[in-house]
Length: 288
Length: 243
Image 1 (cartoon, rainbow over the protein chains, first blue to last red):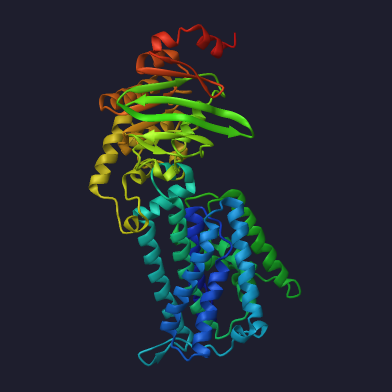
Image 2: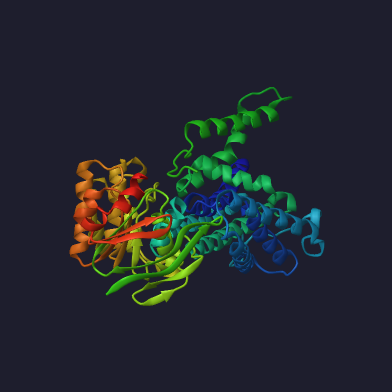
């Protein structure tokens, strides 16, 4: 049971990350590879404020959201000039820089040593110390983020994002300043990624720069493509599958000496087959 | 009265003049057609008027306001809307959403807190019924035929209710039945007193719809006037046929 709680908590955190990234990739057509970095900004801000400044979780998460959004605003001013492959490359550049900062600003982040002893959230004297209580806490946060994302995509703003995704020039000639729309959704998305980062830091009680590298960014992209682009349910589904599947493959019965490699092989093969036969993902509406 | 004036407009690509010191005026409330062989600068001119390309020289005046350059997202506030030679729709959205995009708020924050209303739906219904696509409203655009896509682009233009409408080859590649519908839309715009700028190769349609014709060749003005006169001029025929 604690094992299942652990897996589901991680799935919830990655569902938040997935939904926030889907706003960018699925709904706006911006292939951002910088999401792990914003997740990292959120995680580090929460970890530092909790362990070094003695803050409690909720104000720390609020600061993490605001700081992540501020960073996204600065990055987004530049990224907004790019499209397609160039956008992905430029966002990758930010991801690389962010990890370098986490690794080298040792006086603040403790560098490769990471930050241990991050406390769990506490509200009205109750600490979410057990895995079950943290799972419930994560589910509540996931539902809130889901509702916020749904509010965004069901608005006229959300429709404009999809129009930009399909044809930016055509959107512009109908009077929309696409640059501001892209910048706004980038900033919102970064804020949501910081929530996931805060949850992750507090749940794991330890973070280091290795948690937010390129591989993590690709994992989040894989999750939303697998579940389905431009579909919030797809983001949640993709996160659950990507977290659960490697665990489920543990029980297939591969010989112990090759089990780990076989799990990765089957997992990779399934992703390739999915892209071949259902490129829009399991419940997606948009093809890259 | 002129809705739009172009003075000494220049656009170069790698030193080649696509639009070469062009000056002309487009009268308000009339259908003005641009004809000319491929590469004569018609579409480039339309891109310059709609901010897709930046000018290399000259200016454009809209309602007597002189502009030395135009941004694509400014043309709506200048009262201009357009279609494209290759249809540009929001392909992975529904037919209805393609219209609703045009109807709703332009500002980031205003649009974030806006939901489409019954008013928006009724406006969308009106225009989609006009072009015969209301029954297709829930379908994704990428499933529409070429003619239906052209009609949807026209519907989007009608929804904008702009004063100046630029139509880049709206009849190209259409079956006669669809041509009839697009022709009806152009006539509808003219009846409403809109200024229509039309690029077209079908001379019969030009004669029928246009009040005034400009003939371009190599980015320069070759001839202008009433369609029945201009289209029978020898130099115009030569420019088209290369004789």
